[in-house]
Amino acid sequence: MKSLLEYFGLEAERYQTAWISGAEGIKFQEVMDKLVTDVHRLGPNRKLRDAR
Amino acid sequence: MTEITNQIRKIARDLLEKGEVSLFMAWEKGNQEHETRPFSARRSEETERLVFDQYSIHNLANGLLKYRDSKEKIGIVVKGCDSRGIVRLLEDNQIARERLYIVGVCCPGMKDPLQAARAASGLAPADAGNELAAKCRECLQPNPVIYDQLLGQEQPPRLPGERFERVKELEALSPDERYQFFEQELSRCIRCYACRQACVACNCRTCIFDEMRPQWVGRETSISDNMMYHLVRASHMAGRCVECGECERVCPVNIPLMLINRKLIKDVGEFFGPYEAGMKYEEGAKPPLSVYRENDPDDFL
Image 1: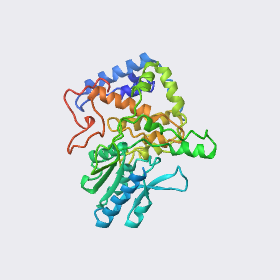
Image 2 (image 1 turned 45 degrees about the horizontal axis):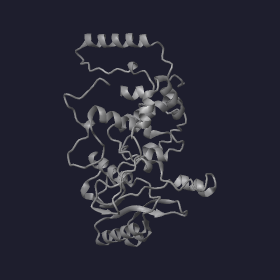
Image 3 (image 1 turned 180 degrees about the horizontal axis):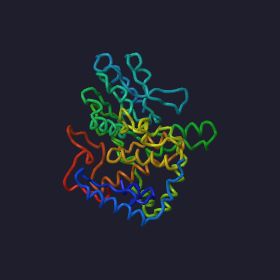
């Protein structure tokens, strides 16, 4: 998936997959933190923003 | 080709008369020289209409989906690419092998009916229709991989040069250049879904793009909705595309769809391969993306 997104010229870091069980609250928090940090680092998304 | 046509007619007549098949799928001639269209004969008299010529370019395997719920036995003529489509359908459990009588034809390559039509009407130079269709110029497998009976002389693969050359060229560009490239190509998409309809691997009964509640993918022809459509369509093709090239051929706005499909073929080959989709039918065999192995790579998730 990431490989395909990169091929289309999109920043693959914006897309992350993680396996989190319903009992893993802490892991959920960590994953979301990482996602937010990664996306902040990339800055605002300029691609695929034309819909509506 | 006339000889193959005669052989096909004879096989079809025999099968229909003996009642071994209820219908026989091949092609018939249309009104124009460049017009050959899919045709299913149901009575032995109709077999006189069957032809195989240089414009029998359609992948008939896709037409089998219409009969997936019936019990009829079906005779079908396949070229190399179509036969891989049959393997696709068998692997996807869309049709039972026992229901098919497959006549394989070693394919010398087809001409593009659209180019020929343009040439005939003066919209393109008169010789434009003479060369092989784009998908046939890059053919890897002209000979059928599954058949009950084989016609014609075995043909060598026609792929000139490197198979993933264009994909590699694109990969070498910067992300922004790639985005621009696809933005430009995909902005033409009118969302007619011809690529989906022509595809033998697109055999879901309910398609994500038709679902309205919830509507998973937007239906505007904006660049973001178009790109979303093509990303999703492409990822459903991963490890399943048999490279018959029909999607690209039927696209009314010439989107280079095989560039996207080949990228996935390349990736699946690198990550899970070596693997070629639909090259060989083994009962119970699973394509790499249908099985889970502990050591499957996952850093691209």
